[in-house]
Length: 354
Image 1 (cartoon, one colour):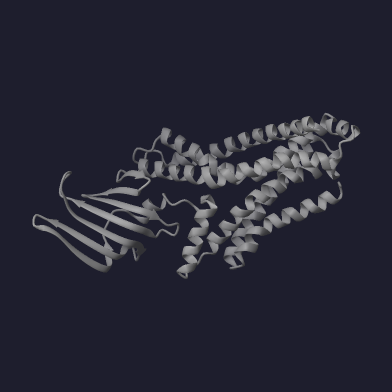
Image 2 (image 1 turned 90 degrees about the vertical axis):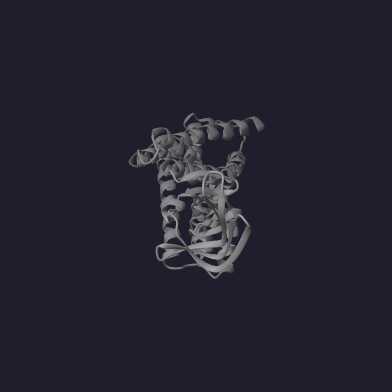
């Protein structure tokens, strides 16, 4: 049985990999075409656009993985059914439950894979992609490292330790230079907000460096005149759907503690939590497609049905998110509803098989 399990798992894995490759190539091509409009801005050229798209692929992979898992599993089991291999397995005494368990084992591997992509790879790669795009398009941005965002603003060097997803700046330091070797002043602010077309800093501390020493001055609020626009800084902000669960949870807690609207990020948080479950359900749905009402149709028709189901799930997921935000529904229900619908369909179809 272990040999058969490995054979079923490898067949599904190979077909899923092919589907992922095709979908990533398709979405990557369209993403690259979108970038062509920005080529020529600053030093942003074809090479930079290509790097940006490549770094964006983990995010695209995470978004399409549940659909790819369904299509790949349907295609893999469809091939086994077309070659009568499933029939031979059944004749040899292998039950549908045993075949389903073999399918779910590879499904569990896919769940782990999509979790790693969503938690580790996609956020970091997307962040690097946005930094690459920003640095290439703007000559004012000089460096982005682990110590935050570094930017050159005239004779000043600006360091922003964290740019929150709502555009708020946190832990801002400004170093003002007379020349390349002489610093004349520093300024630190706890946070910065963009209001009425200008940056407003809070809890500001000034240090003036003079020949006879350093003087310190504190201000609760200060208007900051800078060439760093919100549009420029916005490109380094990772979107909610590409943040990790830990990052989303931390930011949701921050918004709730400060009495701010956190619905958008709560929906994203619960959607991230539900993503591995949805991937597992998509793989499991391939079993009813192979043994259920569609067992008598051709492999192509089965594949089309799986693709349409995956596309329908994607649309329902997007519609549920927007509906939740527009009508201010419970974010947990809005995020989990598509998965619950998918689970209900899986259970209903499974009753006809087992």
